[in-house]
Amino acid sequence: MALAGVRVLELAGLAPAPFCGMILADFGAKVIRVDKSSSNVIMDTMARGKKSIVVNLKNREGISVLKKLCKKSDVLIEPFRHGVMESLGLGPDIMLKENPQLIYARLTGFGQSGKYAKSAGHDINYVSMSGLLSKLGVKNDSPTPPLNLLADFAGGGLICALGIVMSLYERTMSGKGQVIDCSMVEGAAYVGSFIWKSQKLGLWSNSPGENLLDGGAPFYTTYMTADGKFMAVGPLETKFYAELLKGLELDASELPHQMSFSDWPEMKRIFAQKFREKTQAEWCRIFDGTDACVTPVLSFSDVALHQHNEDRGSFICNDEGELSPRPAPLLSRTPAAPNTSRDPLVGEHTHEILAEYGFSQREISDLQTRGAVATNKAKAQL
Image (cartoon, rainbow, N blue to C red; front, side, top):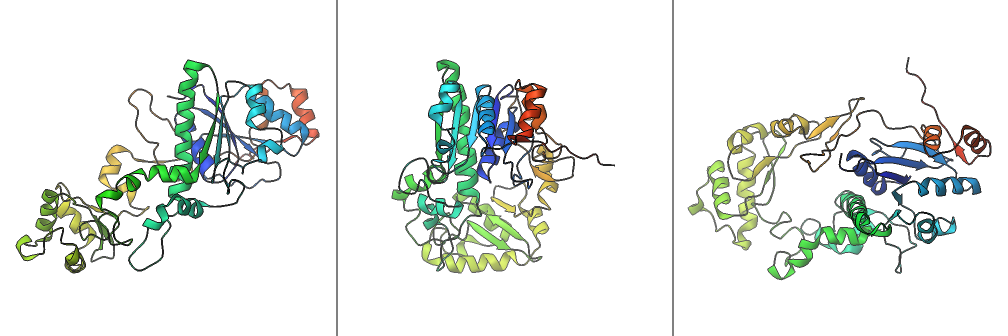
């Protein structure tokens, strides 16, 4: 796999850091999640392919253990607010002296500097600070957060993984590690570069929900079908729009021009009435194989069963029958090979990892006795 041989330490956190670690693990990196000693609760729902060690960072010897692990690792992912790692004596200045080749990835909401660097926040706060939340919503309503996808996962975990891979590549030439300051505010804004750089095109001149690409256009929105499901409609180009009208059995000469903005509400009403005449399956039979840019809005229970996704194997199951997306993108020579076994228990691999990193059996036993590390063996399922 593409990242085979790369050793990653991921300090346990929520959402973005686990996603970043899972991406690296899916593509071959050996990812060790460093869990807190005070919790047996698994908060990481994206632990595929990882192993878990419990290290007590409130214990002086626990801090020494993490330092030793970092000396033999390629990447450290830390998700804490600015100043936390420095207060533990684990800041990048110290850690890169210990291991000059270490990639030290700092994944935070507001970044390592600025007024809000030490402030708490969540995805909605980071998206609001990126400017993008002001563009998201429906007509005559308040801005609508896009789940927690834009900052936590796109601008956070994914951008951080990109930074790590770029840093690993640069290290092959310089032989040196570096610090990654991954701010979810800036990551979300960067993901939204098209929105920023298309301001002069007039695509976002109107209020949210009234523009070409935010549901304002009758040909770029969703419509309910006769069975209460939905179809996604997106034929922006004239020739594709003609295919939409053909499928709906509507005569273009009897409708306003496609780009007649003032007529969009009425056109929406006409299209909505048409889509309510047939079920989702019936509309799929009409539009599949055409360039009308009309597709079903698939539910989580339907998505893996759709022929296109099934043909590509776009979704995979683990050993417990849990469905999730297959890693993307597809690489022709070194594709991802996601682990299908269950997620690790907190501290399940503590002993194994310490031994692998050169700790003797006596040292491991002493560390456990003094509360620097902890282990949690999986019970046999009889």
